[in-house]
Amino acid sequence: MKKKKILFIVEAMGGGVFTYIVDLTNELINSFDIYIAYAIRPQTPEDYKEKFDKRIHLIKVHNFTRSIDISKDFRAFFEIKRIEREIQPDIIHLHSSKAGVLGRWAFNGNKIPLFYTPHGYSFLMANYGIVKRTIFKIVEALSAKRNCTVISCSPGEHQVTLELTKNATFVDNGINIHELDALTKLLETDDTHPFTVFTLGRICYQKNPQMFNKVANELPNIKFLWIGDGELRDELKAPNIKVTGWVERDTALQYLADTDVFMLTSLWEGLPISLLEAMYMRKLCVVSDVIGNRDVIHTSENGFVCDEVQDFITAILAAKEEKQTKLIDKAYKDVLGHYNTDSMADKYSEIYRSVLG
Image (cartoon, rainbow, N blue to C red):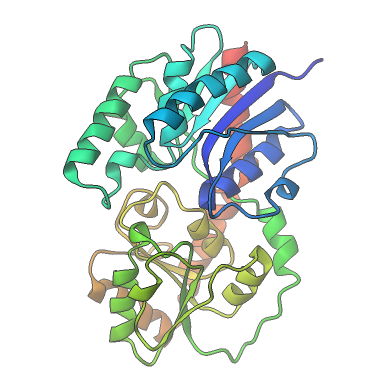
């Protein structure tokens, strides 16, 4: 039988969303004919095309921008409509806020089933002022009235979605454990490495480098590592913090191999891929109390959820004093049994097939 066509429209093709799109579409390509209309972001890997299965069709949207730009947004609106006419997909799936808004007004969802995954709502982003966030929420609320099913990437995001529309469900994010296994077999580990707390990602307001720095300052005898780079690098002033800058994935995993605790101080999240990877690689996870983080990590069960600087300090010192084997094993099993791309792709396939009849 001829495969059904799915058109993914992705504005935020960087960071965790990029990893998610790569892993999901590579899993689905055996069952569906996949097209991805996308935009480049500063965090998009230079060799991004090589990450995708060769059977996946990649189409660059030239007018997508991260920020609001009325002129370019208007052109992007018609550009994605043109792409849809050329491909004639059986399903359209929108990813991230910009694509979600433009796509829900470009397509009516009547003839072609329409889905939208926010990957973290823009109106929850604390780096925007209250006026801007209110505007974003109004736009989301109006767009939610369109004929489209929202598929959130965590239970917490799903609860926020239900305030906007009842036409909603969720599928937890997952990671490609087969790829991770292959990569980790090549790593060289040093059992004598100093006790190290690390995080991974862009050094930006969302990731709260100020909190990361405060914790490091309070623990001067512990090594802290930030794998990544970003515009707020200067916020990491503590002398015991090392910043690697942007590195290739295999290099990042090599850094990660010689660490003990994964600390995520984010102000908001969807469901972070970096957290799931740290869980699978058996690092104790100490995370902030926000949507996404608290959906996955539960204090004294598979890690620690923290509110204040002292909470992070207490959890880290407990891990330094005694390896939290029970918690680490539980987190690993959670990924093995649930938060993986095999499970994620099965659930998406079930949703897609339900609307295809």
